[in-house]
Amino acid sequence: MNNTIERRKLEFNDLSDAVNDARMLLSKGYVSLGKWNLSQVCNHINEWVRFPMDGYPNAPLGLRPIFWLLKSTIMPGKLKKYLADKSFPAGKPTLSQTVFGPNHSSDEDALRKLTATIERYRNHRGELHASPLFGKMDRATHLRLQLVHAAHHLSFLISKNS
Image (cartoon, rainbow, N blue to C red):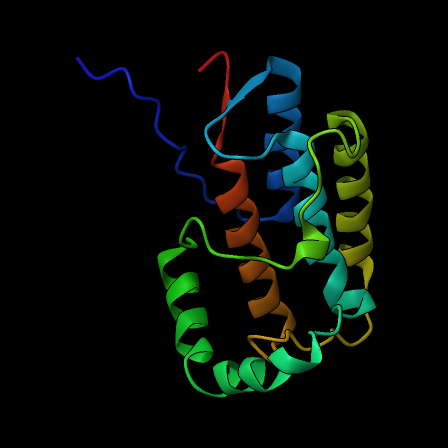
């Protein structure tokens, strides 16, 4: 008999689905199959929802040519794959500015912050900043990427009542 807990298979149709999933985890309790707790996941997703509105952090000078090369060659194909598969590969590096310590904030505060940022994103009518790796995206593509990203991270958190 296999007692191994597996990641959840999540697919969100709207960012409010991600918020509702996080609320469910908060209310029922959860077990993390990855390295992050709910606060860390919510804070991380929050930053990536915020960046297109407020601007992405500048890549270190030495990495800018590499980012440009990736954006110009393989990343358009990766974006199509991520959106088609509705998943991201696990264990890929991310910007250090989007990785928070386990005690950075409470789960409740991180969820509250994410909820507010998603509401701001929903009401944002200005231009969206180009992604350093994927380049300029229309609003619909950007939203689809956000949904896949949120589902990826929340899938590592399993409700204790599952």
